[in-house]
Length: 441
Image 1 (cartoon, one colour):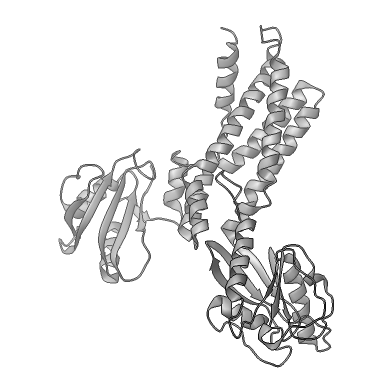
Image 2 (cartoon, one colour):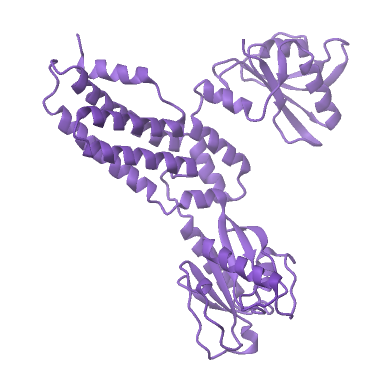
């Protein structure tokens, strides 16, 4: 018998309201034991007093909601208690629930796991729910809500259904050669596999925008010493995150700041000034600066716009680079500079000149890198890996010389899609075989 689990669903600590969730076969019994009353009408808030069963002491007065399964989040009988959020109140109510027979504290994620096991959501929906809880920016919220609502899972499930049908047809050709199958069954199956392969390829070739939006952009600030990199980081962060000094080589390690760029989460990294360094610690800092620049999604290369000629470096010429000529209040240097493909901005961080235009350009570049449009997109590396496996299987199926080999590759492709949503049932395959062809009448 499944345990009845319970846990605090809101954040721990003092608050005006706390929500405790109870799920399992004894949820209704637990509610009756706490209130001494009959179960309230389903999905209606009921004001009641909660009591400690063994002593009869009042614990709190709050709202109780009853969600009989399967019409609940987990698909089981569920109770929600909306109580006062004081630490002592929450502790007392949780303790009283734990003393009732057949109950235990929920493991992390167990409510969502039960929802998945009871077919209330697939794995993509569960992941979308986790992303929604952890969303920091408006862009992340929109994408997570889209996925949690089932949009991404619906795309993969539709592909899986089409692939299952193709596999069923292939199995029918192999297992029932004497039956009256449609003459064009093999050609139709090949056409459908080709169409699926093209759709998967277009979905995979998305520049990883969905993953960038979910995880946040990695933006590296690089350049020679004393160009104003740390000052720029502090300006964007709105606080003194990095030490600013006229002494060259002050920044030795990478300093990271998390921020919101027009709804796009981003991690800005201030790095050591790139130059030939003899001292071991600074040399390591320069190496890390170059590495961070080459690995970043977007680079901000900062030069002293009033200074001397700077040395060329690969970190300055990579794609997705914004060039900043700082210290415009001190004059304009005539020396050439590498212009970034995302624009060149002259500004003075100290005086604030040109800063607004730069921030607008930076935000625009960030949005382009995370532009996902309205269609569901890949948000996790595990999705991309499984989709790649499915595409490879479809390509092998198209090149197969025997129906048996084609069927095996189609089966592998369908299992790869099933890894994303968590669904694969051989009974579905049998249903299609006998429904579409009426085998055996």
